[in-house]
Image 1 (tube, helix red, strand yellow):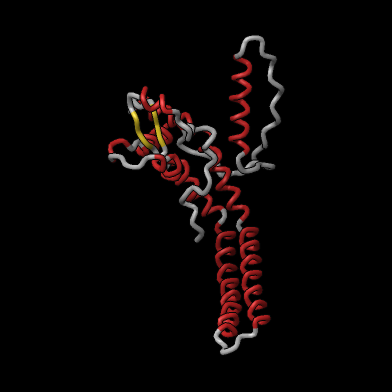
Image 2 (spheres, rainbow, N blue to C red; image 1 turned 30 degrees about the vertical axis):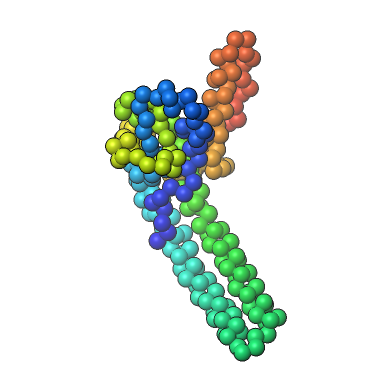
Length: 228
């Protein structure tokens, strides 16, 4: 069965802690910690529950994709064998060898495109789940930082060495579960991956502009997609 228990591409960068931290921020920080927001999202109750729901709802699609993948892999293997056979000849025909190599490459690309098309409904449902979590991630980050008395939070990849005690990923999971215990797997009509994050960012920018003295009222936002 297709693995969907790990978040593939959470669009959280614009809503979470900035990856660029100026030197003075380190000097002024009283509590420093690290947290892996992608791991936290993948371990959240909302994501794990939604993953199971998606596997059930789209079981026929997933089974079809897996079956077709096995068939296509067998076809690729035949072409690879032909290429290997040609390459092992004492004096390989270079034209035939290049043709065989191209046949393998073309078949692999076509297979990937076909499998992606078959699995598109599953990928879209996962993207919608991730999008809903992404919108609330910054709120969960702030709550975890407050609970752990942290005023500077870093991505683990930005740290050379650390003690396990400074990792507050577990605390982030707790806050995410509290703030967003569940999400919908029913993809709205017309939904595009990342749409919810974009809408949230626009709302934040509009609010910031409205808070400025003499700011004009923001233009009406577009109508959100309706759930099927």
